[in-house]
Every structure is written in structure tokens, then in C-alpha cells.
Length: 506
Image (cartoon, rainbow, N blue to C red; front, top):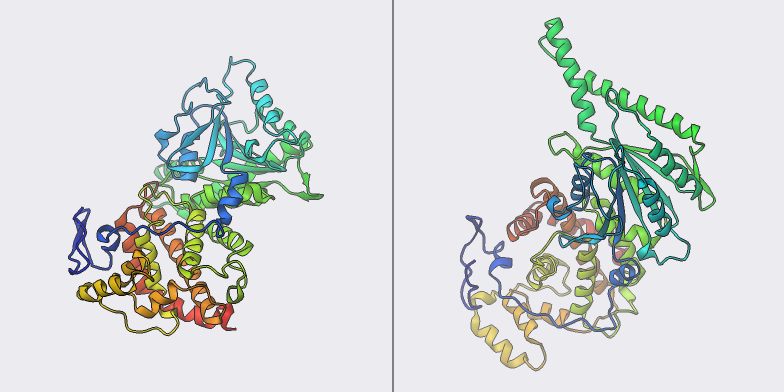
């Protein structure tokens, strides 16, 4: 990477992956890293406070070998599959008490159990003992089991009680596969005894569809039919899946566990069909449905917040959780905030920024989204909502002006303020950001606009990363290309929506 230019020099093109970036897009790569002062203790992170009670979402994976346990984990939590070296594809000897973690996503924790293989004795007893120990009454929430994924073939069943969720994974039934084995029945009986809600998730949906397309191809060859009715084949596969679900329902009825109660209500069984095959059309949608159904099973903040943060499939949960966390404290009554009173506005913005970024939990090893340069880019995006906005100083072409700021205002503004001037902010903007929070509608509008702009941009980046950066870490090129596109295609429309709908101006 090229060395960052002095503030008095124009920014030249920067090459990222052999692609030249415009001066605006090059900011994260070439801008001088500016250290922001630590936030005062009086502005603690609400997200950190929530996650302190349960820092990680705890999962146990149980099931027959060769059903893709590692792959499902890697897909849902966006990590490298090799980082979770569990006993997948073989009759494993995994230690069920071992805690697997990944540096790629610090917000989940995995337990693995060997699959139910012929000839393996005492296995059910090991699994049962672990589940009972991890769901004991009075156990701290962070030590409880929050989800169990049980996989022997193509199905996935999730079960929740208080802080405990159990998900049974069963392969989407193809020819000759039996839906429920003895071990499954024992697990479901345990769920019934614990009054745990159940979600059935059929996995490897692509194999079911492939089977029906192979049958259609054979029929085509036998009948000399030149084409296959794609929609008809898909409907046949879906019909087969619906029939299998009905069989599963009947088996549940036989075990008298068709419905379970929690919070004095009754919930029907939920079913999801998923595929982790990236070549399968709509595989992301199936994973998103799985994350949504899982979220609906969790009825306490101690579990659904860690789940929403840990999962990296469903952006809607990220937005919802950001709103829930922000509304606890820092987003309340921004025009007359008591928590921001007496604090410098740039600290208030940085607290809001960091809490939102923590909820999204991007795979961001370089810390780009938590960097000061990205924060400045978002402040520039928010500039139309700056009170008494003026034409920005072109500080990159006026080094003497920046030097004068350092000399004249050094005792008043910290070095970061000088960097803001060098980045092109007006003196009015710098004064506004480095002054104390002022209870006024224009201050509230600025804060509201920043929250909306940052949230919508992160949503855009999340979707982009799913589409073109699947299970790869963020890099500067993706962040800045997405930001440039966001500015060009959506910023003006969003600005108008904010002005028309912001609570502070109603």
C-alpha cells in the first residue's frame, strides 16, 4: 500500500487489487490514521452491557456423520470451515464438553458430539447428560445451551425452553431414508419433558430437488421429450417435502409432542427447508429463513441479542437489534437527551457509531468499520444536516490554513479537530462536533440522520458482502466501492426521506 500523503498534497490514485480508486474512495487506504480520544466512562456501550450477560451464542451439534455440520456452522456464522475442525464426515470421537470458537466470529460458541453410529454405545447417555447439565435451573445464561442442531440426514429441529433452544436437523427425505430414528425419539421425548418448543428444519434441500430433476431427465429420455417443465419438477419436489413433513407431524403426534407450551401459550411446530449448497438457487433465502425461525424461538433478551449479533445471514435482525439497543438509552429523545447532556457531540456520535457497528458484527479483521477514517466518511455523508452548513474548506489545497488551525486553535481543539479540518470540514462543522451537546431540534436531526445513514449503509454493505464476498473478510475496496455507490445512488433520496420523516421535525 502506498504511504499516505502529507495533508498539504493532493491525493493521487491508490491501487487496490490492481484497481485504481478515486480520491474519495481511497480515503481508508491512504488517509493518515487519527487516534480518537477514548470515550468517557459516562458513555458506556449499551451493546457491551447487554452482551456482558451472554457474550456468545452457545450451540451443540449432534448427528450422523457426513451431513455437513461444519458447513452449516460456517454458512450461518460466516467463518472459514476449516477453522471449525469438528468430527464431520466420519464417525467422530469428539469431546462434547470442548468449546469451539473462531476468531472470525467471536459471538458464537460450538459444542460437537459424535454422530449416532451403529456399534457406538452410551452415546445417547452422553448427549442427554450434557443437555440436562447445560439447561439446569439457576445456571447462568452464558453457560446455558442456547441451541442444539441435531443432524443425521436431512432435517433440522429447534427446541427452546427459557434460555435453551434445541434444533433437530434431519436430511430432506429422499428415497429410502427413514425420517425418525430411535435416538431422535429419545431427544424429542427429552424436549417434551422439558416443555421445549420444536422447529423442524429439513437440510440438503438441493439433493431432494436434484433427485426429482434426475427422474425428470430419465422420463424425458424415455419419452423423447425435448424439454423439462422446470416449474412442474419444482412443484413435485415441494410436494414430496410437504408429504414428508406430514409424516414427521404424525410421528410427533405418536410421541405426543405436537405442541409445547412456553410463557403460558401454545406454539405449533415450525418447519424450514434449507440448503448450504451455494449453487442451489435461493440457498441464501433458505438460510435466512432458518435464522428468522430461530430468532422467533428465543423469547429473552439474553439469548436473542447474542443470536442476532452472531448470525451473519439476516440483515433485518441486525437493523431490529440496533434499534432495540439504541432505544434503551442513547436514541431516546435526541432533542432533549439527558444522557448526552454535558458531553462533546463528537463523543456522542462515536458512541452511537460503535454500538451500531458492534451489532452488525461484520467479519472485519482490519477494523475498517470501527476506524476513524470510516467515521469521517460517514460524517461527510451527514454534512447536509449540519446546522448552519457552509461550503467546506478545501484543506488539502490549503496547508497554511490547516497549520493556522493547529497554531490558533490547538489549545481549544485537540489534534483530531485539526484532522477534521484537513479532511474538508468547515470551521462551523468542527465547532459543532467539538462543542457540548445542545438540546435543540437541529441537534436531534443531525443525530437522527447519522443513525439512519450509518444503518442503511451497513445494510447495503451487508447485502453486498453476502453477494460478492461470501464468507470472506471485508476489505477496503469493498467498503469504499459500496460507499461510493451508496452516495451516488441513494444518498439524496435518503436525505429527503429523513427531512420528511425525522421525529425531530414533526
